Length: 264
Image (cartoon, rainbow, N blue to C red; front, side, top):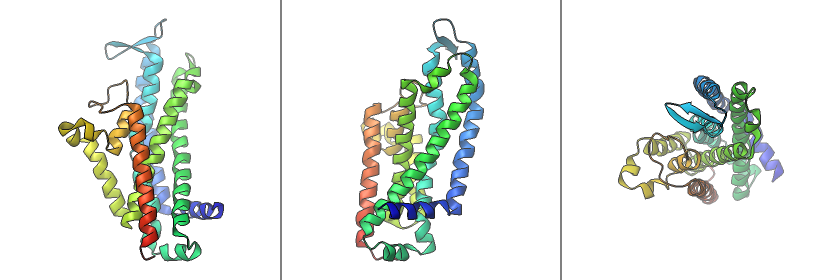
């Protein structure tokens, strides 16, 4: 299995399309840090002796507000991670090389597991880079006030939830693409799921059903305790469980489909 994972990682690292998608995610992440930086500076400048700060005419706990802002600044560009997952999974189908991979690894279940592990390692590594960029940007603002907040238990919990979202959302893109054998199908499917959440179409009819959509679950996981733009439809724990469920179902389904179809 380690050799399969190494081989799949090598494929990922040599794909131009993967690096284009990776560059887009990093660039968008930097843009959101640039957009949020004045707000972070202002929040720190308004901190009172009791740790509260005035934000939009209301008093909030400054540390909590800054943690949530950091999380949102990574979450927004993080919506591209399922598209990155689709690009990673669809590379061999575009090049018609899936047959060669099956010849090299006849056990297709092991092949899919290797692909999933390699894709997860790559996207989590990129996710850590995005979190470090956001942390560095926030550090510049809080270094003379409370830099310790950036490695507090509460901040590490935010980072862990972000990595859970990044990893599971990318695997949803990977799974859908492996099932459909088309990168475009994986991209379109994930965009549709994102739009169902952003447009609040399902939430308007049934918030309980909306809570089981993957990107609604991501909102529930990451945006608790702040203005999320629209009402949340579940708890953070429920959101995390739903994301894990989608990732597991997508990858298991992909493994079963790849195992039964012709290698072409």
